[in-house]
Length: 350
Image (tube, rainbow, N blue to C red; front, side):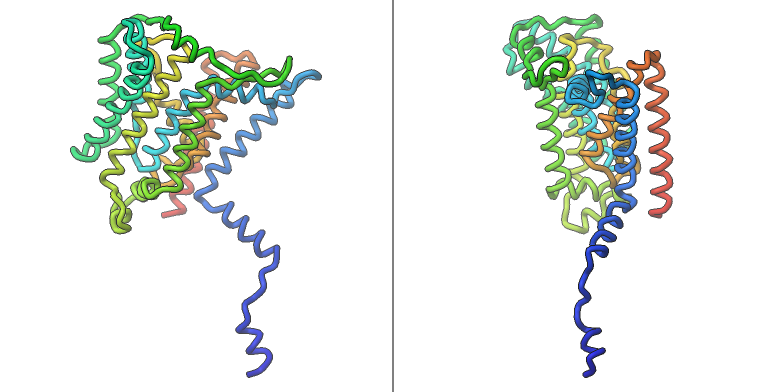
């Protein structure tokens, strides 16, 4: 055996450049490109804000900015997390805005009639769980298209909300008011920022969703459902696509119930017209966060970034003194860009 033949059989030593090349290849995988686009958009908005709105004594990018962002959008983050499960599975849930309104009114009405606060909060969450379960049953066992099933859930939630009341009901319960006003202060003037209960609940939901979707058998099944073969691949892998298809709507409904309570904490009231269009905001946040509407691709942390982008657009529009419809125009333009990017990626994957 010659020295040359021996050298050919020896394993090739990888150089640092080889490792960096593999890292970049993984980063540029088509599955990650929408999320990379989200992060790039987020950085661009932060740079624009820093250049335009920073002053000698206050920076635009600060803990105060992010604190205000997540205080104002905690309920939307929870809604979008639930929607992430549904969209990755290849479905859609149009009921969440109606569930927010129904949950807020149920909470307000029960507290008005003297029900104990812990009981009211549990019932509020279960309202969302019940609507989500109904949609899941229609989708899985009656083979109704998710769009139609969730639209029926939306009409049901809105109808029940109108039955409870057509005027706003203020929540005056002292325990609920204490939860709504509770917060921890950090920093010193003029850079004081806060952490409130809604932020903590949203963070807990976020961490639970990351674990459930990315580190469990259930999460793998959710991705398998969105693979485009109606869950057949997941079934061949020994997973349970049928039950999972129902459970993603239960999760979305439960998140909508939690989001409804957070929105009630934010507004301190229940109103039958709350949450109008909120389902579209949640869907937009998930898509901007990198999830493919065709299913099978998406990340919970991408949704978190998508909600942050959504909130930053509102902040920048307010700083510029723009009318409220400009928020929708800019969000629509960004959403269109991400949908076109998705279209290109799906076409290449095929």
